[in-house]
Image (tube, rainbow, N blue to C red; front, side):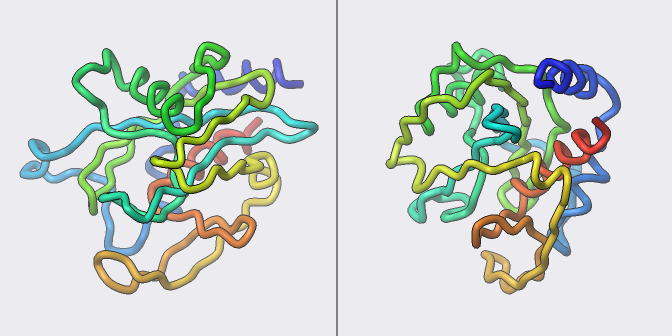
Length: 207
């Protein structure tokens, strides 16, 4: 079963991706997905890792809660990842390095199977490259508490079968905002994380 899913994902990630449509579904109001010409010079490059692994009959991915001390998006739920640094040979290397640093996984035991659509986050001017990786079994996690407040293991297959989207008003850096989010164990998964998840869910729905 997992071999079939893996082959499907590899093929699907090489094809036409539902990025704009999927991102728009979870886009906060008043935000945009396209960069303006005058913003291009100030856009910062970052990448994240969507690590998939099987456990029982389900497929999980790893999310983290950012510490409240972080400069960007404090306390929010995100994927392991961060800014592309000068020493990184590629954005893919950034995603793997950050996952190793944040959640302590052995990155030699996972393999990158493809990449989702790039996502521009207007409020922080980050362009996010999202790499999908696969582990044959649940990794051993060693969370770096300096960078991660909590590890959240998200049952992706549950949302593929029954995609629940809720709405709420949040206080944000730009004021109160009515947002769409994925509810999970009392958590609010919204913003860029929800938009990235939305694209992967849309791809998996067609499997």
